[in-house]
Image 1: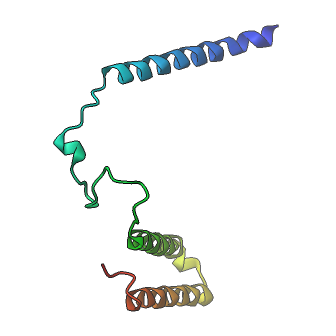
Image 2 (image 1 turned 90 degrees about the vertical axis):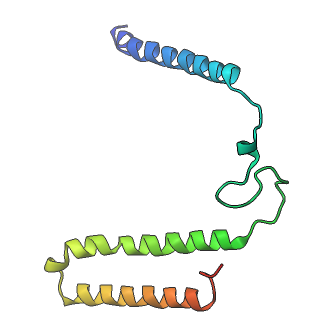
Image 3 (image 1 turned 135 degrees about the horizontal axis):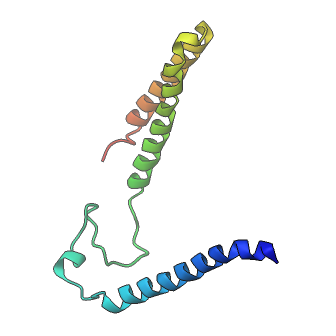
Length: 119
């Protein structure tokens, strides 16, 4: 029975957190104003009207630019550990990274040539 006493503070903490979550959720639901004004109905940074049909065609260029950004961003992250250990790396480590950078530049030039970066 002694081991159950060790879990009472956790049970009390869990109970208080659940009750507090319901109080906060209920208060925000009861006190929030749901009147639409001109700022809520105006276009945001993307330029689309915020309240249209959800089945509208979304321009695929947004996804393409986001994927390209993630791709090149993640690839350039590999430069940091390489730069930190460059003095301990043999020549093979240096030339492997030069090959990686060359392939990264070739991929960037290809994406630029096919017009992926054009609006």
